[in-house]
Length: 153
Image (cartoon, rainbow, N blue to C red; front, side, top):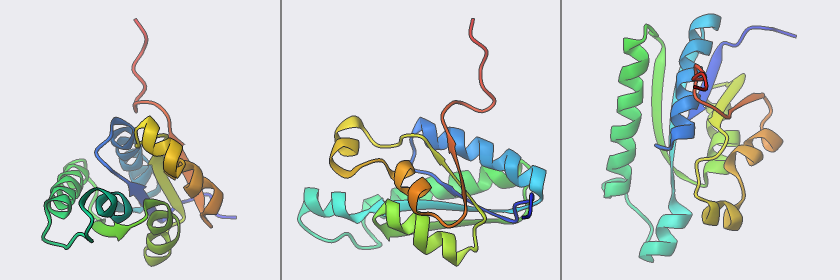
């Protein structure tokens, strides 16, 4: 059993929890000299339910995803990482992260925030992080607090 990670996949969605996961992923990639793969999934199910149509790559929701992922990629490179890839993909975040992209990048570690959805969406669709933990074939790190953790006053 290897104790080193070579290909880290981190899921980002713009939430504070995803931000914490991203910060942790930078430190993990540095520690293990691993590639860092960033993924933002445009949840087409939610979009279709709201707009009654399937989103296209030119829709604002994809543009916002590309801007978000590019920001994270630039931050990772500025932090000293050289092997950074960024992806924006349509679909169900649960399946795209745990199955599709984990396999595509040969991930041996997935890092995600504990909760990125609001309470209502979580009730309706279930927790993405819970699904990733239950269905991924590699290690999963669920980040529950800011990294590094801020000391209480």
